[in-house]
Length: 379
Ligand code: UD1
Image 1 (cartoon, protein in one colour):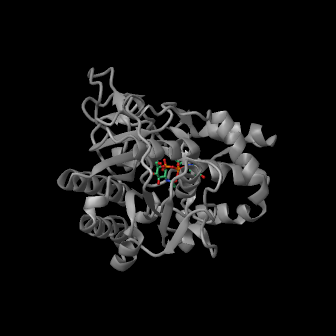
Image 2: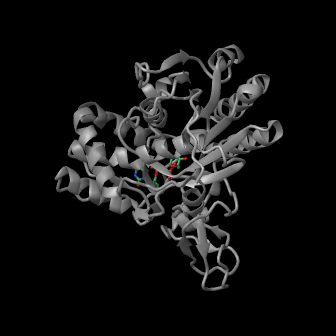
Image 3: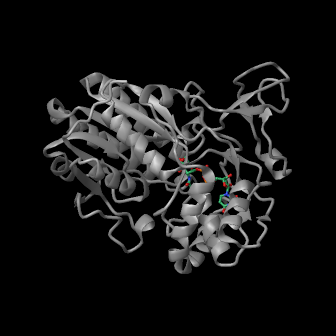
């Protein structure tokens, strides 16, 4: 494999957040110069200034601000675009904010990038597994190996959780989801991530800038925001367990995801920056393993030594999918990526970190569920 190690300065938009801060650390450790442009959203960071490494340069500002973007691009050779509003549920009602900041923000960034295209060698954008909607399913009823599925509202209200094959009505089996699966975004958030991905890849093609979109599966790890009501399930469950409350499990807990540790995500971004022979492509970043929400609750309880069974509330979150876990063949082959943190190791690390931050976490996770319930997003 022809790995190269470019030395130029990297701009990371959204680099003061959960994923970005891990990437900043990693790139600085490899000797890269790093600049961050981050709007330090209060929803994510509370009243703090974000997660900062003194070795990097930080500019406060949003990608919607042309002048801030121009300043951020000064002297830069490659760009990692992480800046985005993140929250499937919230995007259902804050449509303008999500479309504006994720889609228009990307448009502004790309317009300004076009002005300095001669010195830009690569653009890597964070896309999301949420763009698939449901993952891939095979159906023994009609023999399809990638069938469309449906979960109607009536079905969910009858507490019948597994999707049906849209072709023949049988119950299909979930399979690892490859990049070739149909894109069926079913939230405003997912649609904006799809747009970010496509805008960056089309831009890269048009201007001859090597562009890679990474479709992130369910990322967890230290520094995950606990103040954000839309943070991921692992951090929410761990916080509750640490404070003596049972995790609240929606549906029956047998819904599944691909939980990938943030350090593996940071490594994937680094590889995408380094590998100058790979471009114009969207790649899954996960572990390839299917893990249920109940598994998450049980592993965390074990790691924390807490004897608390999860509470299965038999409700559902509006817009949730049932199963999606990644087929990571393409990123293995093209970037030489290999997940290195096992689920058990990663959960142990997450709980170790949360033990230090837990006292303030309890009320926040309660507020998180409360906000969704009050908006009718949990039924
Ligand atoms: C998550 C991200 C999304 C990202 C995607 C891929 C969040 C909120 N969403 O979506 O932005 O694009 O991964 O990386 O991080 N659950 C419970 N109890 C809870 C919370 C959640 O049972 O208290 C269940 C949910 O109903 C769902 C599963 O856990 O079935 C996963 O939920 P979540 O962690 O929010 O992730 P995704 O919705 O998959």
